[in-house]
Image 1 (cartoon, rainbow, N blue to C red):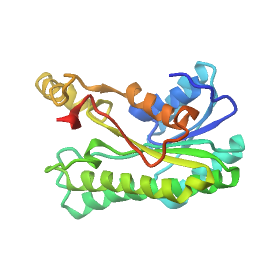
Image 2 (cartoon, rainbow, N blue to C red; image 1 turned 90 degrees about the horizontal axis):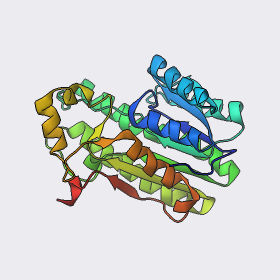
Image 3 (spheres, helix red, strand yellow; image 1 turned 120 degrees about the vertical axis):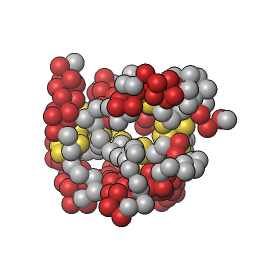
Image 4 (cartoon, rainbow, N blue to C red; image 1 turned 120 degrees about the horizontal axis):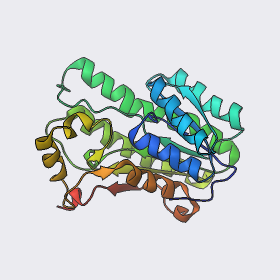
Length: 250
């Protein structure tokens, strides 16, 4: 998963664990300096500690992506700390498992974090990348951004929206040297799914949801993110890359 990212700077939201942490570690292992962000301070600082212990460079900045002013400050921190911003993984999001997403408060929170948060991040990141003339942004969507989900209207709608924003950004900034893509994970073993996966019966059900017969690993999504940011994907933009063990092939 190592790329030649020496001298580059990456920003990862939702990086206190799971997919975001795996991506942050991957960027750092490939030579990039990393700005780690989350609302979970302990987890974010732990991600930074893991990076620095391995010889990498990273700083932590708390950011609620639903707050546009905090996102602006986050991107400004990346520039003030490291002088530039080359890659961004807009990964922060929530999945209201078991909640009624038709309730106003649950719906509004889903939209604020999963959709508005991605827009705020893209807006601020692109401003820096436009000045540089180059950059790569990857948003975390979901297979629920491509197919329906009868149980979760908020999650499904916002993840469809993330793919729409991704395609918008790809078109808007294509000639400016900024590529914008999305990853669409299937069922992945992360802290978000841990409460379910800890139950043996639920674990069997989760494993059975993919033709490969297992949950995906955070590092497998991180590999896709790093590839999309690399020069190996230099002609790829506006693409929702599915990493789901075959779930959407059925």
